[in-house]
Image (cartoon, rainbow, N blue to C red; front, side, top):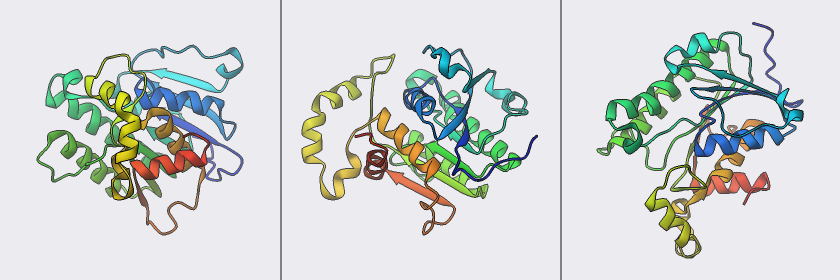
Length: 243
């Protein structure tokens, strides 16, 4: 492996896992358009649905592989920033075991790889209410994932905990459709300490992830792990011009 660049002032190379999901696909589009990101490597289990313009094809490398062989698939990949946007639902996964595989095992495997490769910064999407002690299976798995990644001692770990995610999904989710319709009302009701419960768009989460990638001052008073609730995600996205 070549010499790793830790200075991101002249741009950074990104590894993105989870590029076919709601946030991941938004993040990929933004990274390809972002001049601060000089190269994007995507690890995916299936080909990307969106076409990439000829002028950006040289910036993108796509590796199609089984995530069970993640370490082998990523052999030789170099990056300064690792983005993890993996996530599913019980309905889609069908079993708790399959859900845990996607939302815990794969992010943790990516964290292990990042440590081995000397990655300086990992940015991962979790969920509001994540808690390793929760009685709710979804929240507990997300919390366990956060806890394990934090234990690795990465130089920087940024964890985003969005509330209800809005965007154009391939599959219909009734709750999200209702939230989209009620979004103007929810913004009025969720003020003050309730701002963290506002629904947030996929593009805002993606923009906040890019903000975390280039801002080296975010952890100055936070230690090695930085948690972002939905209101903080929205604020970071606004800095990047995404509201």
